Amino acid sequence: MSEKYFPWLIMILMSSVTFVGILSELMPSGVLPQMMAELNISEVQTGNLVGYYAIASAIFAIPLVSMTMQFNRKMLLLILLAGFAVSNIIAGLLHNYTIIIILRVLGGVFAGVMWPMIAAYGMRLVDEAQHGKAIAVIMAGNTLGISVGMPVMTYIGNEYGWRTEFIGLGVVIIVIALISVFALPSTPGEKLTKSSSPFALLKIPAVLLVLLLTLLGVCAHYGVYVYITTLVENIKLAGGIESALSIFGIGSLISVLIAIKYTDKYLRLLTVGMFALLVISMIIILMFGGITGIAHFAFFLWGLSFGPLVTLLQTAVSKQAETAKDVATSVQSSTFNLAIMVATSVAGLLLGIYSPMSLAYFAIALAIPGMIISILAKKALS
Image (cartoon, rainbow, N blue to C red; front, side, top):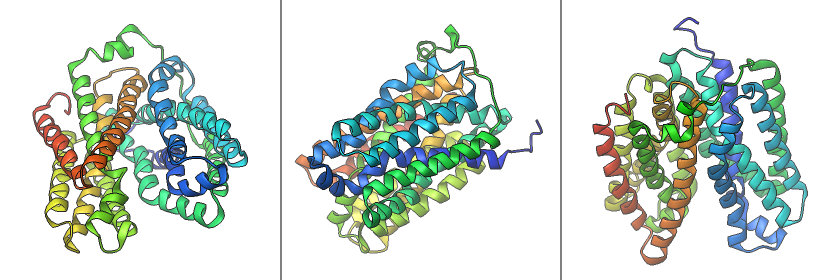
């Protein structure tokens, strides 16, 4: 394959999979009051619609990715897309909370396999020198889903009902699956060997270092992001949460474009920058959070830091595995989901004891060691 050739259309199609993947996970967050009222459930039960999905992704990623290593990559992705579509459409038609939770857990299982496998699938379609670029384009769907997709889906849910939102997403996933049947190349699976097993990967110091960076980075970002509405209300940001999310989203999109262009050449520098920008943005919020303009700039910087998070960490861990990159990225993906759960729990405790500004201190306390480790981790981030 020519070094200059990059299959943009295929990578953008894969990016649409991560776009609907993140929406499938986070969609209930925007319509919690509606679901509480219609299903007659508590706030905690409604939160479990997202929480159980994430737990299932974290638990099942490593064993199921290992079990499906020998499957044809295209066939496996089509099965996963069918699972996403069916679980969302049926959940949108049912009134039984218990069955909806089971469907959400199944969706989480499909996601646990999809996130690591699609990055590895994409890497197999390009030269090694373009692996970071492939991951950046594919994972851009994740950032777009959070910054653009979620506001759109929440609007649809609020205007036409949460059921329309769920069924609509399921239909979009079916369309993506049908296009994938004709557009994606068929790629055989790989044999799982002792040297490429999850346990063998966990013996590599560089892999452990990347997993530590994943824990620090994800906990720092999501500890604040999950409660962004509370933070925005506390600092009385002009324009409210809509303004904060829009500016954050613009920053995220810009940094994704930077990651697409430079991840393969400057992985360590970008990782250091990601942690550094998070520290700077949180300091600005702490010191100047009440000042219009400066506070908005802080959310823009935070978005710049947030955008390439998944790309940088998945690229870093995949570079440490010569074969079975699906398994390597599944270990990182499980750590990612575990970190989101930890961040949500710890940040929730902090909010119960201190003011919302404590979340900024929490992010800084995790991002500074992350930045220092990134500066020193020449091998892990080479």
